[in-house]
Image (cartoon, rainbow, N blue to C red; front, top):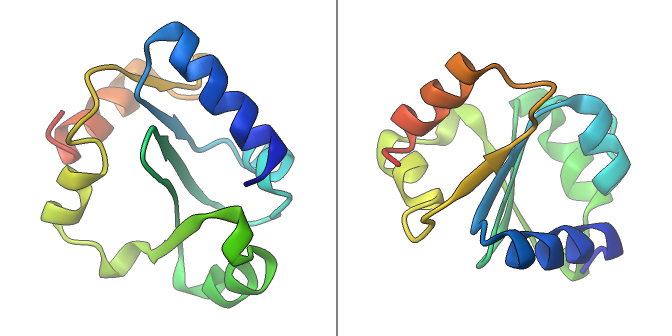
Amino acid sequence: MNYKIRCIREKMKLLNVQGLIISNPVNIRYLIDIPVEGTLLITDKENVFITDARYIEEVNNHLTINDEFIIYDNKDLSEVDYQTFFKDCENVGFEENYVTYAKYKEHMQNMKI
């Protein structure tokens, strides 16, 4: 697994956070070195990258099986899919200086947290 993602998972354990939503393109590029738009979801069980169909091939070519990511086209996701991402997460974090609280609430509503 990517060293930076491992470090985030360690920090999540210390903070008692079971899930994390990252959507800032700068942060995504820093963490997984992919210059595409999307949303990175890190939970204590899996790493998920949700992006537009235009970027799926590039992401699949960049991330290897060792990176341990599940990649989704955002158009292929159903409401049930969104609900399962954080189903076992009691606490979910997000980027304080990038995501507004309204956007956070929208994510939580979509994912039924």
